[in-house]
Image 1: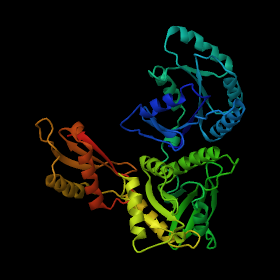
Image 2 (image 1 turned 45 degrees about the vertical axis):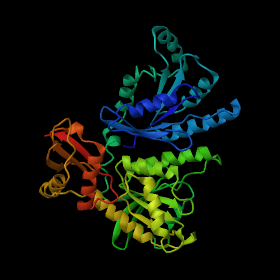
Image 3 (image 1 turned 90 degrees about the vertical axis):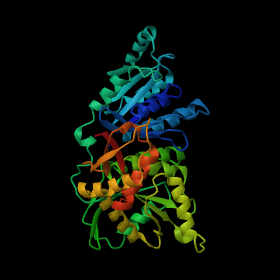
Image 4 (image 1 turned 180 degrees about the vertical axis):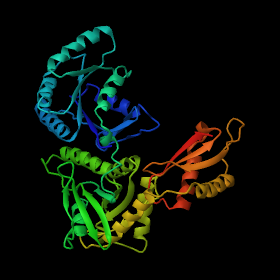
Amino acid sequence: MSYTVAIVGRPNVGKSTFFNRLLEQRKAIVDDISGVTRDRQYGVADWNGKSFNLIDTGGFVPDSSDIFEIEIRKQVKIAIEEANAIIFMVDVTTGITDLDAAMADVLRRTSKPVYVVVNKVDNGTRELEATEFYSLGFAQNYFISSISGSGTGDLLDAVTAAITEEEQDDQEQASTLPKFAIIGQPNVGKSSLLNALVGEERTIVSDIAGTTRDTIHTHYKLFQKEFMLIDTAGIRKKSKEKDDLEFYSIIRAIKAMDEADVCLLVLDAAKGITAQDVTIFSLASRKGKGLVVLVNKWDLLEKETNTARDYEKVLKQKLAPFTDVPVLFISAKDKVRIYKAIEKALEVFDNRSRKIPTSQLNDVMLKAVEAYHAPVVRGHAVKIKYVTQLPTVVPSFAFFTNYPDDIKTPYRNYLENQLRTNFRLTGVPVRIFFRKK
C-alpha cells in the first residue's frame, strides 16, 4: 500500500474533521494515530477494500498572514512532491478567498490528480453556492459535509479508482529478498547505522535508487546474508524549519515502511522513547511490518548493573500492548551489536513468513482454549472448535466459534499470547479473527 493522498487547504475549512472521518470510516480495520505536534496527522484509510496513506498538512497557526502563506506553501509543495493525489479542501461558507486562490495557483502546476472538495455543503442553497469553486479550474469537484459525511462516498470512489493493483498489492514484490527499513526520528543515527553496515566492507552488488528520490535501496551481501536495506535517512534538508523537515521525514518514513518487511526503529539512548517514536512504531505495526527496536548511542550512557534491563522495561511499557519485540542496545559509531541487529531482523523476517500446519495449530490452541475458556455470554458458553492460519502476508489466524462477535479483547489477548508463546512470533504483529463456525 504505497498510494498516498494529502489533504491541503487553508485553516478552518474542516480538514481535520474530514481527515478523522476518513480514518474512522471503517473502525474495525483502521485506527488513527495521534500525531506529535498536531493531533492526528497521518494514518491509513480504507475504502471498498483498498487502503491508502492519508496525510493532513494543515494546522499552522498564522502569526501573520505572510509567514502563514510561506509555511502553507512549503507544506503544499512537499505534499505535491510526495503524494500520489491531492485533496484540496475549501469552505462554501466563505467562498473563494485569497489563500484558496494562491493555493490553487500552486496546485495547477502539478500533473497529479487534484480533487477540489467543497466542505460544509449541507443544504440546497449551499449546493448552488458551491458551484462558484468550478472557477478555480479543476475538473474534479466534490460537494461534501465533513460533519455528516454526505458526499464523501463519491469522493472516495474517485480517489480509490486511481489506485492500481500494483500499488495496492505491494506484497507481491519482484524481489524475494528480505527488505529492511531503517526508521526513526532525525539525528538518532540512522545514517551511521547504514554506513557502519555497508561502509568499509562494501561488497554491495548494486545500489538501486528507490522509488522516491531519497530512499536508497542497498543490496547487501555479507557473511552469507543477503537482503535489501531501505534507508530513509537521506532526507534532503530543504530548509531549516523543523516543522517542515518533520513533515517531510514522516512522509518518507511511511513510504519506506510500505516497502519493507521488517522495520528497524532506531532510538537515541539519551532521549529514550518519545511520543513520536511510539507513533512510528504503531504505524509500522498497523501496517503489519516486523519490528526490531535498536537503542543507539548506548556507549554514551552511564551504566549500572541493571541499566539495560530497566531501560527495556520502561521501553516496553510505552510500546504496550505489542511488547513481544526484540530490543538491542547498539552503538552504530563503534559498530557494537550492529550485526546482531541484522540477525534479529532476519529472525523476525522468518517469524513473519512462518506458516503453521493446521493440525499443529489446533493441537496447541484447542488445549489452550480448554485450559482457559472464553467468558460466558448471556448465559451461553462460547465454544471455539477450530483454528486455521489465513493465507496473508502478516500472520493472521481465524478461530471458528459459535459467538464470534462476543469475544472480548482480554480473551483475544490471551489467544495471541498463546500463539506467541508456542509458535515463535517475536517482533511480528499477529491478527486474530473470529468467524462463525
